[in-house]
Image 1 (cartoon, helix red, strand yellow):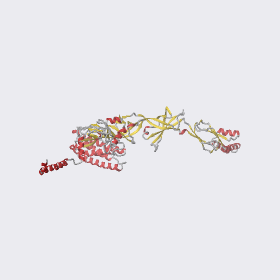
Image 2 (spheres, rainbow, N blue to C red):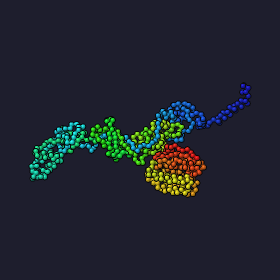
Image 3 (cartoon, helix red, strand yellow):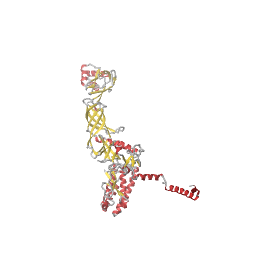
Image 4 (cartoon, rainbow, N blue to C red):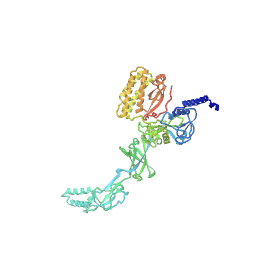
Length: 593
């Protein structure tokens, strides 16, 4: 060894080898952490096992361990691409997580045209049965025959006795006028009329005149049968003419005052039968008829009062009792007949959230969808837009799914994507729907390879475009429509100048892009339309079009490749389209050839 190090030539060779090895190592080393990440991801994409969390499927690691979010043990995951990768509105869970969250689903179904509306309210006294007993003449209360509120009285029953000096004077005037009635008949008539105005009847006046005796006390009689609800006097009180002595109410008939919210009012009409129960009278059901619906909504409660009348001859129903009422309802013509359970909704106003089960997915997956709900019918809510019959929605455990989606960083009720669809008047949507109908005729002409039919439909589109009114469009909505209108007109003009199918199809692509933008921005008054895509159009560059049918009928190839294409999106009537992830999708058809 010493001989080697003594040999300077050998030592120089060793040093050069070390330096050269270091340079080569630095040269082949990955240049950044990003390359390490790409290399790591490449390893994950190999056939080796991938580990994930049963509660957080977005966690995907190359080795077993604990979930960095919840700490649960990781489990082997499939290497297949999940449904959530393609749509951020979809949250994917494992079967174990679904079982732990006790998630149940059910199909969206129709409801019977007849149903029941569950409302709450109170028992109130019938205002027409209220009466106030007043003093007909001034005087002092000498005696009371009604000493407490709640006492039952009958019509004509004595309530009190009044001593009235003014009445004594009036009687003396009558007796004096009676002695000179032949000479001064007008004074006699005026004296009798004065007593009549103090509510003395003819028999009482005749008795005074006949006996010649002046009475100093008169009885106060009840004008109505019922219950005394208020006593305003005591013995010795002095009262004036018109003073309210007692309040009496007849409770043989009562009002049932029910609170009906705005969404409930379309189902209630005058004459409807109401059955109700009172908490204070268990086991008994009463009936009533709706006689009045308040035309004004209470701004505080957002409800209107519905009044029903009920018999109460037994006296069991007492004013201010709380009641639970059922109103038999009937769906109006044209009203949605789809309904979902109340437990399926994440409530956020008229527009609410449901989770729709994604079909044919490897793992249980649920799509967050915003729907428009209508009136409540019992434990069900009518669906105005956003769902179709037969779709499967979560009816139990919806909060668990939403919470898991939020923890995973997915969209949830509190973190929704930005809405692309703008609020516009219904009349405007009807006008652009007429525009879409003209567009569909153009599309059908190209599908049939019919140049003449296509050109004819272009004229109808020009007419429909000219009839679209901008009344009610403001700000960005107005500007966006103006830009789209100009682009639609330009595309139609270029198609009008073409005489060949090749040229018409070239510009039809531009027309289609704008019609799709119109559909997503404003919505159409059609139950369902489809965004289709042909990947082979224009030398494999691909092109979209809007269709009113789910069946693929390719306008870019016509009979040559009629079924080439696939459904990319489905737009439902009244459903919002989001900026990211598109609208809530239905099951899309596969790519056909």
